[in-house]
Length: 124
Image (cartoon, rainbow, N blue to C red):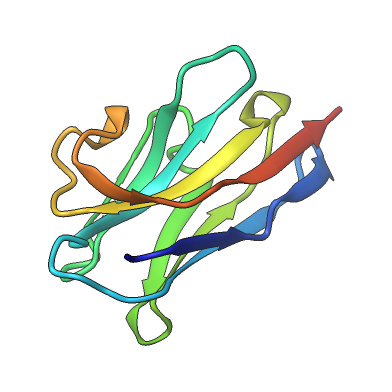
């Protein structure tokens, strides 16, 4: 069973930056797409950003476009989420996931593997 381990969460002030990491224990054929989702207390999970591992094609949610950057290092089996200009509304638990396709990614469809999450808190 593949495991995804997130790290890098924490508490920062608004306007600050954080970089999240997600390392996979192994790569499987059904992990062509990897990315980040988040869930704030009392809210539904939402997609943040995804990347196709083979082409490095990326997609972002509109509310993070221009502030967040997803990247990968396949040799380390790791993806990253660089988050700049953080806002209090970015506060959430951030989850890494992987699946065979990024189709329907915003809702988390098709993701076969999920990490346990790393909390991010942004204060004023």
